Image (cartoon, rainbow, N blue to C red; front, side):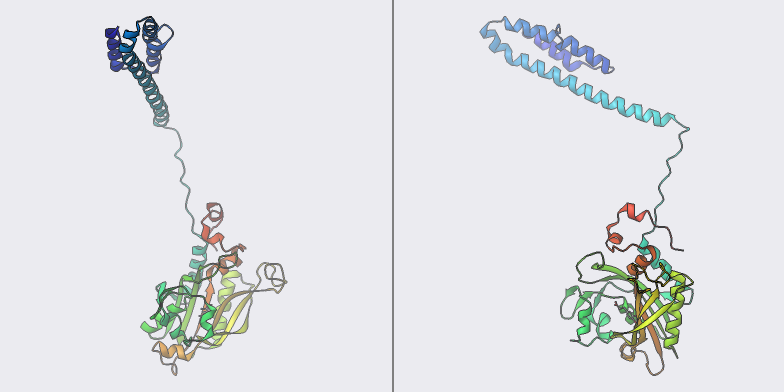
Length: 344
Ligand code: DAH
């Protein structure tokens, strides 16, 4: 009997099938009702107790080897059959049209930022950028925020290091400072960038958002130039019929300062839910650059004057697209992003 067991074990080890059908045949020949291994177990039942002790282990080893080999062969051949049927259909169908790649799209914030750059670019404003990690001087001090002035509280700041302070810029006005430090008038720049504030995230506030800052410094720049520039922007961005209005405001870096509203483009100024029935939507802060700021940046304030303005890119996008939940701009949900086409 032991010789029979060994020769069957050799047969199991040596078995190489040509296909799945042969594996099944082999299984029946070995383990089927009338199979060789099954027959051996029948014979084993009649053996003496001593023989059983001797042969038991070898019998089990044979059966396990056969079952494992069959299962393994079946799994591998099934996988192979699946893969090759797939590959052959792909390889052979030469007429099948190529799958079209989905074309990517720009993020709505990029679309609006690019549009802002383009509108101001047409009247001579060149893009300028600056670092996101800034120091206190460029973000506050040079912009006429006195050390303990409550205006610093207007913007909750993320500090990287204290004394001397390194921080994440809270507005793009810091780029104005860097430009004025390195260029002499005439200066005409539009400065886009990310800004950071320690705000709780909600539908109307986020700790990261985008601004675009404008700066124009030359001889005899007046408030009328500011007004006309912003009116031009509003008409280009929101439509020819747009009007603007300016409300007095306060910023440490401009004097006088103003907040600018544009007539609601959804109701044409008649009043609706979006403009809270006022007919107006706030779009930016602006003003004449404070002489202290010019002086801090090395520009002669007796010779030059200028205006500056700053707007939130998300805010403009919100008004342009009617998407009022700010968080959608940061979640990168493809179902949201795929809805945007370039702003014309
Ligand atoms: N930096 C201001 C803010 O983040 C926006 C701003 C207001 C920018 C007036 C300006 C300006 O250049 O003149 O709220």
